[in-house]
Image (tube, rainbow, N blue to C red; front, side, top):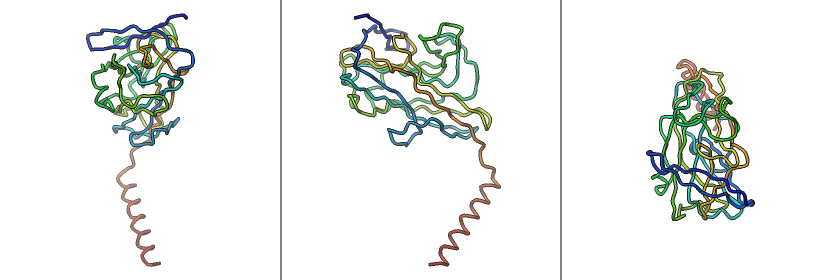
Length: 233
């Protein structure tokens, strides 16, 4: 079988583990939604307010005999770059990551790397996602609740929304089959890499914060509606 590999960052010092390719039937998918949404919700557009913070939850799901995972890579792209690595330069400042939290304690030993252009796929000079790369590995293969069929909550990422109202911010959980570093993938229970067949993409649509006068008018309307309902009882 043709060998490919994925490098899973084990520490900020930049150590890597090189693994083999998973069997053909194994598969993984990644997605994100708003914090507090149902795990199965996969929105194509999420409305966010300009000048505020917003938190998104990141999920994965495997099938085909992947088993309990040994490692997880996620590249959460919210800008773009034309090169790879931590020195890649972002093309826009529509949003900024301010915090990332792992969803369970046995993932917390992983690495976080901001400012990373996605590896693989396009050649340098071609636009690719830039954003936040998270990576964790457990060589004993005992990550809890990561088995096939589970909508597994990887972690939560909080972002400052800097773009003006009316702006669309493309968001991608980036991966290309057979790529190496800076791509989203998992390690199966046999330490082989499993890539999603396509990246997961969506959009944050930026809306304006309501003006104080509008909020006051809305509050008066709600109060009037409550009074009307009381009278009719």
